[in-house]
Image (cartoon, rainbow over all chains, first blue to last red; front, top):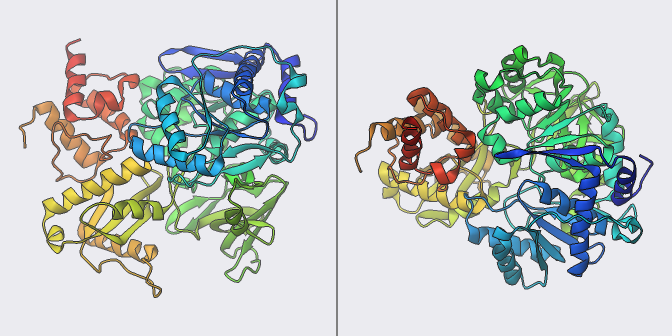
Length: 547
Length: 85
C-alpha cells in the first residue's frame, strides 16, 4: 500500500486486482457461512453509497450505523467510506437496556454529532425515528432491507476526493451515557496506525484474522475489520452474541479457517478456558495460530496460563499468547509484545507486560508535577504519535483537556522497564468490565435515582475478580431509612431495585449492591465520596464476613 | 413464595450459589433473571452447562437466549421439552 491514500482509493485497488478473493468470511449462527469477496464487498458498499446520495447526505457528514452482525453492516460502513461520509457504528439496543434510556442517549448523541443520516434495519426504524424526533435534528433515517449491488464508478465517488487529514470515521467506544465522546480519526491516522502496527505483528496476506468482537469497539473495528480489509488479510467474523453463548465456535472457526491472529480482552481467556467442553473440540487444531493478542483491559498472567494449559493438547503454541496496550484515541495499538511477554508483580496479581511502543509512538511516564519519570518509576502514561485522534467530535473543550504538552493523557498508570510498558492501574476511577469502559459517575447517578437510596451518597468501583479475569462492579449505597439496613429482606429488595435500574439504564450488569447505613461512605476533605477509600472499607467488611 | 418443582429448585440453587454468589438468595419461578439485571447474559452459557450435567439434556447454543431463558419457569420448559423430545 502506498503512503497515505484515502480508504476509498485503497478499495479501488482491491476492486481491480482482488475482485474474486474473499475479504470476509461471515459466520451466521443458524445460517450457512457467507464468504464475501472484495468484488461483492465493494459492489454492496456502492449500493449503500447510492442510497446516501439519494438521501442527500453530503461528503464529510456523519452517518450513524446501527445494524446487527452481518453483511449489511459491512456494506453500510464501507458504503459511507466510499461516499466520503464519516461512518460511526453504534451498538443496537439489547434486551437488558431500557428502550427509553437508549432513545434518550441516541438523541443526545445525535444532538452532539449532527449526523446527516442513520442507517439501520427495519425492526429498528421506529426507534431511530423517535430518537431523531427527540433530538430536534433533521437526520435522514435509511432502512436497509437487503444488499443492493451497484458497480462502483470510482471517478464520481465522494470518498475518492477525501484528503488525508479529513475525518475518516468516528468511534464511540467508552462510557454508558449519551454524552459519549466520539473519537474522530483521520485517514492519515488510520494509515499511520496500520503502517506501524502491521510490522509489529508481522502481518501479511498469508494471515487469517478470526474475530467475535463488535465493530463499535476499537479492537473489533480497527484490528479485526478495517485493518484486514485494507491490508488484504482475510477475516472470519462471528457475532459477539453467538460467541458468548458458544465460545467453542471461535476455536472451531480458527481450526476450520486456519486462523493465525485473534484479539481478545483478558476476561475472554478464562471464559473460553472454562466454558468449552472437550466434545466441542473434537478435531480442533489451533496450531495455525501465531498470536492471540490480549488487549483492552489489564492483562493477567493467570488468564494466559489457564488458556495455555487448557488448549495445549489442541495445538496451541506456548509462544502464541501476546499482549497489546491500545486505545481508540491512538486509532488502536500503542504497544505490542513480540514474544510471550514478561511478568511484573503488583497488587498481589501477576500482570503481563504490554510490550514495546510501536515505531511511531512516543510514550512517556509523567509524575504528579507533569515531570517525565525515569525507568521503573510509576506515573501517568502519556502518548504522542502520528495516528492520534483529530479530536473528540464537536467537543473541543474535552479535546483540549485530553492533552498535555502535545501528548494524550491516557489516565492509566504504569512504568517502563527495559523498553517494555507495564500498566499497573489507573489515575481515573474508570472501571473496565469485559473490555468495556464504565464511568463510576454514571452508575452512581443512576443508583441515586432509586427511591430509598440517599442521592449523592453512592459509591461505584471495580474489584478485580481473578476467576473471571476482569473487574466486577460494586455499588455501595446509603439507604435513606435506617430500618431498611437492619431488615435483610428490605435491604435485598432495595438492592434489587438498584441493580435493575442501573442495568436497564447502563447495560452494565451489577452483581454486587450493598445497602449501608447513613454516614458509611468515606468522603474526601473536599466533601466528595472517595471511591478508593470506600473500596478498601468494603473489601475489609467482606473479608471479615468470610472469616 | 410459590412452591417450586424439583427442576426449578435445582436451577434456583445453582443460580443463587454459583452465578449470583448469594447462597441464601431465594428466587421466584416467574422472576425475570436476565432482563432484570439479576444475572448477566454471559451466565447463560453456565446455565446451559449446568443443565447438561444435572439433567442430561443439551440446550443448543442458539436457544440460550433471553427470550427462552429469562425465568426459572422458562428454563424448566427448555429442559422438559428436550427430555421428552
